[in-house]
Length: 387
Ligand code: PMT
Image (cartoon, rainbow, N blue to C red; front, side, top):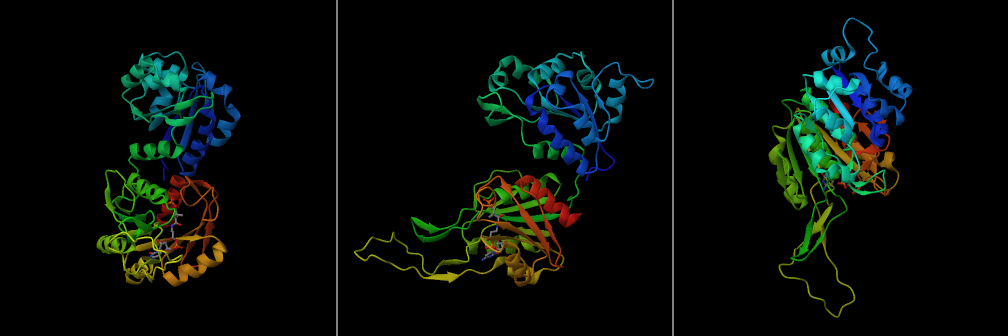
């Protein structure tokens, strides 16, 4: 994905420095050349040896460690396509904002003329300090704000390093790498809602996170995205809100003809109530009541049978015999790929930020992905489809 690009990762002295090891791996997996510069304090949290091994390059720390006729800060600033400072501490942010060059990292930042991403991470009180905020606003860089949550210092609040996928996606975006440029990708998301009466419905636990991660990733990779979802989503791409399986079917059919790829991550109800009561169903003295359900159309199966140039991808939610059932499902539905996930596990699948999936293709190939967050899963799915 990033071959031919050189990314300069600047690591400063915060506990989130350990997370950057994984970011380096993500860049390397995408074939980027990764250079690393650390402040001396960063090495209190990660070792030079680890960073060297992961980046397969020497790690620069000392300003006067000159190897050729060019001072280090100038040669690093010249040869990288982008600089990513993560985690960025309050100290380094403030120094860069003041134009200070008291270590190699701040000197490179001062001399750097290409895009710079800054991903701050710090204690929540430091983050809220007006001086830090002022300094941050002085930087004309791409700032990826920290997230809220439990912080390593024991506090709860805003200050946690944003997700590595966000940093990765922003890097890709700023390097203008758009492998899905010109492609229309349609994604379905969320659980369908099948009304019983004006106050009751049948649905499922799908949160829409998997579909949203796919849509955001496709957008970041340059696609023209149509997200058909049962959830309220605010995005700059085309979001089509639907409710029932029948609504979803109409929306998919409308978007299908000029689509290049359709990914059905939605949990579509297999059955709907035969007759939706127009008034609230009243409690009676009977101990039991019955609802008659009728089969919903199988959207995935129908579009798979009509596809011409479109790539059609389904998801497969199983609570037992995952691979066996997935193999059977890809054959029956006739789609090109099927992403199988185990929805009996609480730590993945429904509502979780994580998933662990096996990608099956129509030729019988299978690839199991380890448990990772849904943005990473989304990336891997597009990598599998488009290489
Ligand atoms: O939304 P999250 O909380 O992030 O959770 C993600 C997820 C678990 C919902 C997602 O990863 C997932 O597995 N989605 C598919 C759920 C599902 O309906 O699985 P299924 O095995 O019942 O259906 C197989 C495929 O057929 C799916 O692509 C489904 O969209 C499609 N289908 C199903 C029924 C139907 N009537 N029409 C369909 O098109």
